[in-house]
Length: 319
Image (tube, rainbow, N blue to C red):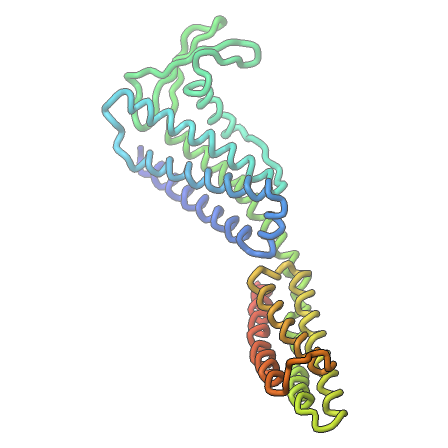
């Protein structure tokens, strides 16, 4: 294998790894992952396809970095395994494209790789091509790390020797894989861009406006309830906080950003808000003023936590 082939294959492998990382980052982002998991068939197909592509890249790397064996049987295993890995990689890429509804067409280079695989190790003893039957076998003396000779027999043609260059075959395949993978990444990036543009100007942190600080103060005053007016004013300001958090939850849902962890935290927060609401409505037969102050302290301090989540998500939408 010459240095140029080595360099080209190394660059191509790194590029495919980079594209795979982009897809994995997309599907592991909650706003997209939850949708894909709802379509469990697609989710499973995506995960399987990504893993197989990665596994076949390992096969290519190991083939390149390993010494070619002296044992004739293991030589066949090396060649069989390499060609089958390329075949599996194509199928995985096809199914990954299908999962994201990206058009996949087998180009000439990929067809050539499949033809080599089918002839050499897929159906060598009897291969029907457009009505003509062909028979193949690998020339054992020709087996080497860089390729082999493939003998072809057919009724209409004499015996032919076909030279198969493994390095060119790998290069051709990886270049096509990069093109197909890039199409998938381009579509996912476009989807991400459109989603962010749709919500970018409606910042989550704006839901927690500065006036909420005043509302928390008035809730505390209402708990003390020196006058009926204080209690009523505290109750009204509690409703302002409740409405803000309901709006926050709905905004998270509309962006598909409400993951299990945030939802759990919000449920606890609404539990505390509901307990305070019962206190103001005299619907609690156990809560005393100190208890209400404890709940108030919790909702006041926890509010900063949700504000930080809002800011973090808003920043992600600026990418």
